[in-house]
Amino acid sequence: MGGRAPVGVACAPEAGSLFPIGETEVRCTAIDADTASAACGFAIRVRVSQTLLRTKFVAFGDSITDGAISLAPLIMLAGPETYPYKLEQMLLQKYPTQAFTVVNSGKGGEDTREGAARLPSVIQAEQPEVLLLLEGINHINELSNARQVSALETMVAEAQRRNVEVIIATVMPVTPAFSQYRSTTVPKIRDLNERIFQIANEHGLGNVVDLFALFEANPGLIGRDGVHPTSEGQTRIAEAFRDEIVRRYESRATMTSRLSNLANDAR
Image 1 (cartoon, helix red, strand yellow):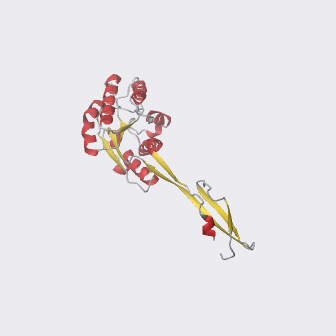
Image 2: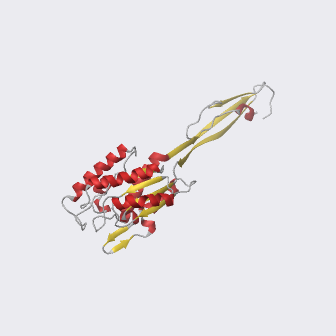
Image 3: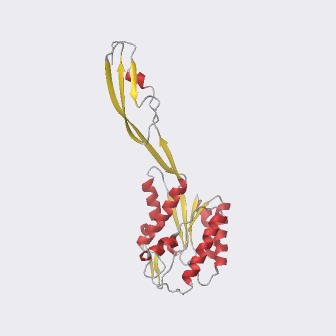
């Protein structure tokens, strides 16, 4: 700026300040030995960089995961309408600097015993970081909850043995339109879900994605066959898993700026 030395510079906020997230205006004034002064202003911007610590997921389950609307007759949603695809797109939109994979490993008609037998080969083939586990509605009336729990625990243990983290969901409710509906069906689902919460607690899985509560509060998300979710229901499943994934794995790296060496810059 010119002027006669020495030149003193004072800024507000002062040098060394820690700035909050957002934009902060800084004003600096310089005064030389002849008391001549000059001032300048500029903005400091602080942004937060958000990323996920996990990027590869396998959605494992039955026809609900696979994307069926009805089994008799068989009607399948298009791939982009399934919850695994929607979840992948939600993650890509929220974290555009990262690449995500959500593999749809749903298999129509599968019960938990069959899932326990199939899971090792899926993990071996896909090498996921996180398993999204939603299974238990098939043969709900025929299988005892004890057998269902045993199969689910086998799946959790298999994933953990391979260093795959697990996010488990509750089994969704059914309506009287369900072809296998009985008066005991929903109470049995409730009991199974209580045991799923116990599995999560005993195996250190963290929060359970409570799809039963979500769909019980919004029965219109269940399709006309009384068991499979609508397209909107698939979106809500994706949102529920997304919210838990974000809660668990989001890393917020705050890029703070400190005011420093401004005296030299002002000169």
